[in-house]
Length: 547
Ligand SMILES: Nc1nc2c(c(=O)[nH]1)N[C@H]1C(S)=C(S)[C@@H](COP(=O)(O)O)O[C@H]1N2
Ligand SMILES: [Mo]
Image 1: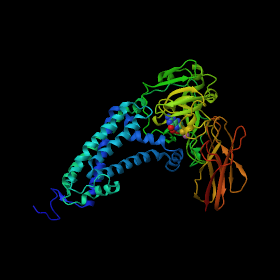
Image 2 (image 1 turned 180 degrees about the horizontal axis):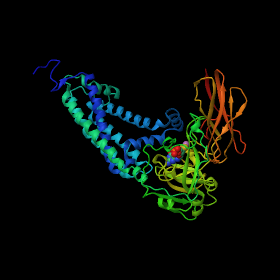
Image 3 (image 1 turned 60 degrees about the vertical axis):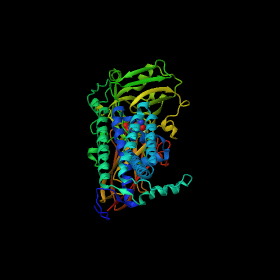
Image 4 (image 1 turned 180 degrees about the vertical axis):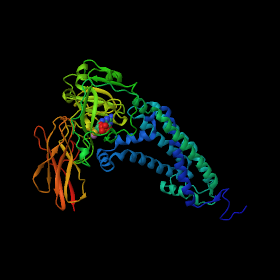
């Protein structure tokens, strides 16, 4: 056997510092992967909320300052959740790589680091909305696996400590860190490449198998099947067919359809893993300042004789002028006022604290819940049970209020209380306590900065002012007069109206602006306001170039 530079790959060879850095960092990453894989497999036994990645991501969502959340929604939109999960995993990988490097020389640092990461996951799971002591298990079992495997991965890289090189305690930490990183330079530093690749490969395989199996087994909590098996009752008060020609979208390319398909409906919530609520075990508690507190099963709600079906447009307070966080659906549900009168809500309650199974709190004005016509506990959306992402099996819908104060999804509890006694989730973060929707109108087509052939074409879009109704929509081209657009037939004050204005475009650049007026005569304000804290105001404008 020779001892030249190209020496055998079967035994330890002297390796440069850089030569061992990458394997050590990779060992850290593989150990972390294995820890997460084992954690995921354990979570499959305990429940989805106990998965450390989900738990940490969820805590990040609730802990980051509101401006950061708003920026994330503005920049990433509905990709915010994948980006958060990806970012969390990337941070874990970076920390794990650093731990691998440090552990090469100081195994205790690796062990401590992994245990700290595990403790972080455990703490996140424990402090979750439904956190139980059992939820710490996946993080702890995963961390234990990581602690066991890291030394095994590092063994093929590890040098026996060269005597007299370790600095005594009391040396500044930076110096000691330098020693650690320099460990690979020392004489006799061994790198058994073949053994390293074999162990690391095997560990990565175990990580993939445990993680994959965990994810697969977690599907047993999925309620898609239970949802599909649910038959919706017929409403006592149906919405009736839409009038002929109610939807102008088929005639106007680019115009938003009158009714939004469930799969196209915008989704806004803080749930990283969509809550899976078993419809059989479902309970809705109504309590607090009520005469007779009650708990309802899903069958209680579905079996009622007073179910209503209504077309309602739902909008998000975070929607920018011209934005897409609005949708219209045909909702089926229990009239909220009737249910609240049944339990005898106290006249002294001015806020209903609505709680979801995932710990969200939404503060809803009691008065609106009691008096707004068509306010409901929705169980159906466009002829199907609520989609899981939209709150299956029960959510609230109240026309005229933004979703953050009226539309609690995965609804578990309604507590009649007061604004003085409790700030709900978004109110704690500075949003207005009461959230009536602002009058809004939007140009759907032509799109912003579009080049279009000069000549006649339709300008079209939607406008909404739920509970009040849209009475008129006008469009201005450049500095011209306001011109009245044609509206889609009136269906109900609670849903948006489409509008269309054919226009002869002269060649050149044009600024199109739209404004709506409610049925009761309020003209949409031109004053610009950001979504925070009460919803955006201002007129939507679009610049186009006709050629
Ligand atoms: N449980 C829960 N319900 C929630 C939210 C949430 O984060 N969690 N977000 C609210 C907000 S801000 C809006 S705008 C609507 C959006 O409902 P959608 O996702 O079905 O469109 O749900 C509301 N209900
Ligand atoms: Mo929202």
